Image (tube, rainbow, N blue to C red; front, side, top):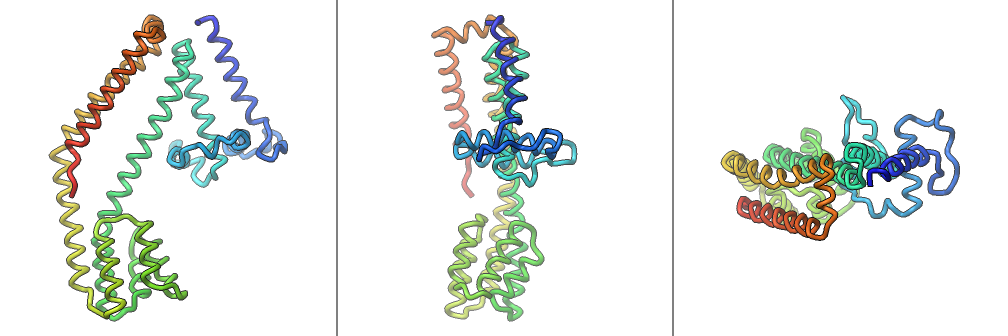
Amino acid sequence: MASIMPWLIGALVALCIALPACGDVDGALHAPLQRREGAGGIARAVGGVLCALGVRSRADAMLLEEVRQLSVGRVQPFKDADGQVALGALALMCASAALVGGIVALSPIGMVIGCAALLVLLVVRAVRRRARAAAELEEAMPEAFGSLAVALGSGHSLPQAMRYVGSHAREPIRSEFMRVSFAVSCGVAAPEALDVMLSRLHAPGLELVVLALKVSQRTGAPLKDLLAEASAMVSERIKLRRQLDVKTSQARMSAHLVAAMPIAMAAVLALLSSDYREGMTTAIGAISIMAALLLNGVALIIIRKIMDVAL
């Protein structure tokens, strides 16, 4: 196996060099490499080849979005990249990770581990980023509800109140409230515009507020007290969530460490130990690893279910 690895690594390097020179989806040749816009041009060329092969339709949007969020220092080279460029960048990153893993392990198993490690890292980053965005949205809702109560209590119409909240709120509240304001001002029915906002913006207490706004549009009932109650409810929810995070932080960290350590140890041994790799290729070794991964995953799911407290 070790004698084959130089050939495999050489083929991967040749593939990484040859892909940017290939054509795009329409088969047209790109401009010479010297005329392309740096890393974006190379990624676009690679993405064009992959799109022609139908890979883009099977690529996970979460991974492509995480590629756009990656930064080198303070620069995000693929921040405004389209799907083709993001797919090409992801392919180049996977090829580089596989190349590093193959060089370290001198085995195809190292190439697989390197590529898988990169994908797992991107997924973890994406999950954390989404959780952080959801927490920021939850913390911004009490202020938005309070501003909406002030605007409606001052005699503003629904479009004017939505525009007022949107002009003083952060994203994504700003965009969603402004969309409702513009939609109602352009003749869209208020219940329909509110339902569209509710389908895009998932925030605690928003469903109750939208229902109250619909009722108020039909009956003219005042909403100041209800919006104040919704704001207090969301604030209390945030307080309880923080207390719960503090009390379960040690248990969550222990669960993550216990679940990650066997996988990390197996990956390191597979990269550095030829004897371990030979054992993995046997039937008993493969069955043992699959059983260990399955039990590890089941244990992690059970621990997460125990710590999952619905507020």
